[in-house]
Length: 68
Image (tube, rainbow, N blue to C red; front, side, top):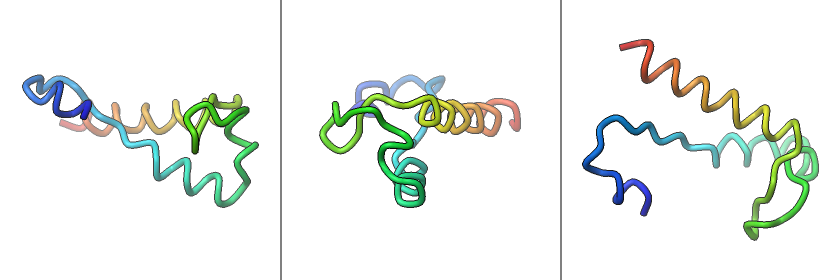
């Protein structure tokens, strides 16, 4: 739904974080990355979760912006 709202704007980068979190949680457990279940099957991040999120976003920016 969010992509549909911004479909006219070419300057927005959408970053998929779902897969990296699912993989990480499968390896180390939910509590390593989240402190609660605010979203039902996800929540607010721990420091480790925030780092995973930041690294994934940084990678997307570097790939999509600086490798053009």
